[in-house]
Image (tube, rainbow, N blue to C red; front, side, top):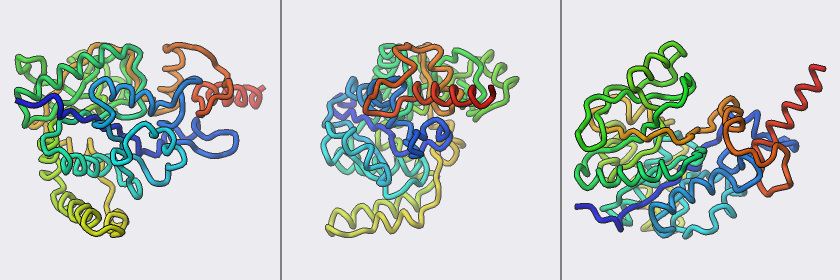
Length: 324
């Protein structure tokens, strides 16, 4: 039986957000990673992810992985977290390494950790629906700690910009096997997938730390070993810069492509009812979110964070003036 006190939340906040750069580049010309922007005029998306995490566990067991080059944005935004819970990557080496590094650090502190991985660029209009599903996923771990659960959102539309999970047989306990993954299908295939019961891949993962580490060892065991050696060096020899040196030589590892794909038998998917979810990964999806979400303002009121709504309004105004 797993211990509820071992629940850890890991907020993934190290991405560069390059696909949204046209919208996150402010008037000064500085591109702000999207997780440090607000949708309207409130707190940044990162804070929304932290609030999601705090609904599952305490701040002492909430971690965030961030990038060194983004320090000016996350230093204040993560001030409420313990310093040891802010895991800094020397540079971006893909989502796979971005999960593996904090995974190893959390397991060093708590070998029995149960992890919930939460991306920091999500909009969820009905948070209680997602929270209930995450609670159900954690309950699943008590019965099958060697499997890894993926949260699949029931689609609200056919969106070819997203990845899809095709469920297989029901396990009789609320989850299903994974038949296959489909990444960004064309529109016709997207509609066909949805008719067949496919779910949006939200990139939200619920797993014991040990099971998730097995997924990495099955695909990139040499990188796992080398990263562990570097972490041990920094632990045992203060001032050792083995991690930074290792990151210089690391390849890009994509979690979905390089770790998950091909290991379908090791995963289960749990369907999350429609909850107004969006990953805000592209300008198109931000525009959709602005149309369907709450609309407190389309102009910035001078908030502390770059407003995607204000940016969208500014760029639309400029484009309209240019075409007039």
